[in-house]
Length: 229
Image (cartoon, rainbow, N blue to C red; front, side, top):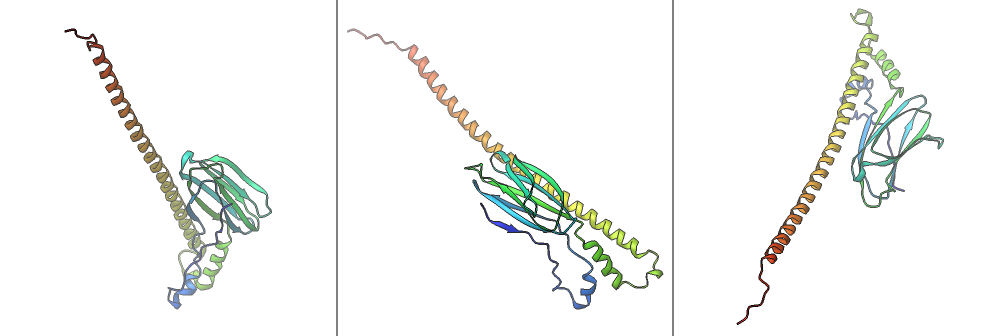
């Protein structure tokens, strides 16, 4: 079995901010979505762990970008050890689960392959992690006199959340497009190498067949009778 890797929540680096901006900056949290690309050797299994709170949403999307067959076994296990998803010899997949408190384990298994390693991309999308309510409370502490504003605080928060959601969706789509592009490029390069190889094989065969045909035709017109003196 391969190494086990823990995936922790992203941490916002506030050390570089001036002290007077820290209270306002505390109202913003980074996106919890993450993606990772790694190489899975032949005959190996790699497992990852993601801690989750109660009643959150965990979405895992994976793709095999390179390797013979473009396939891998995928295994998703709940904190209680219950198998939620088990797929064999798949090139890609998308799975969403409503979580419980604990560490979710998901593994990529390439033990069925004895020669080819696989390049695997996966992305985690975490929703309902409880950060939105905390952000609203932080905003309310630092914003006063909202009655004097033309737009209510709730409208501002709704607009910000809408923008954040759309930006997150755009980033997710761009990441998937890059993954599709990488896989298509690997397939094209593999096909290009195969075309070149078999073209060389056909060229060698044609040269050999041409030489044999010339020899056979030449042998037909040779006078094999011995000359007498």
